[in-house]
Amino acid sequence: MAKVVYILNGPNLNLLGKREPEIYGHQTLDDVHQMCVAQAENDGLDIVFRQSNAEHDLIDWVQEAREAAHAIIINPAAYSHTSIAILDALSACTCPVIEVHVSNIHRREAFRHHSYVSQKADAVIAGCGVEGYLLALQRAATLLKES
Ligand SMILES: O=C1C[C@@](O)(C(=O)O)C[C@@H](O)[C@@H]1O
Image (cartoon, rainbow, N blue to C red; front, side):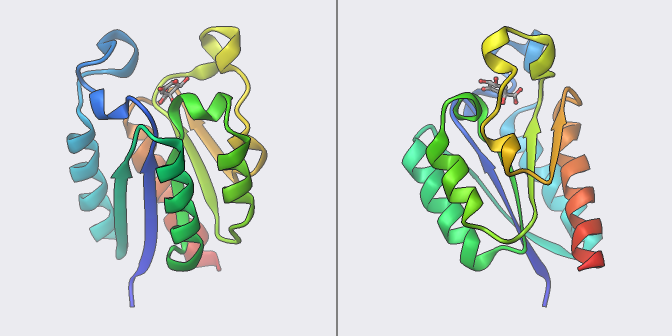
């Protein structure tokens, strides 16, 4: 049976492609979803791809992934910098967690430099544009092959 990777996206990522394209690029979240489906197929992985602007949805989905996923890829967006609750939910998971940021958060405003989620993440990918999602999937596939 194929291993399952949850790919969770936080607030405002529904506006990818329209929002600050000079920072986040021109590809939409739907494009990212399609790219991830194609790569996951190559790696023999099943993906669950979701986005919400609500912190509680992300927490509920991480709790769901705790039972259902073999790995979690998460772009918590602005909640990276504020949400101890998402960190706690991820900390309750035993599967690999990979954090993705489209932009290089370390080259931006100081308030973006710290991510609570990074404390739990096995890997952090930032500044690779939406390709970061594919790199995260590649890493998840490697970790799942090793396990
Ligand atoms: O919404 C986002 C997107 C982001 O997570 C990124 O993907 O680069 C970076 C965050 O600082 C920001 O709040």
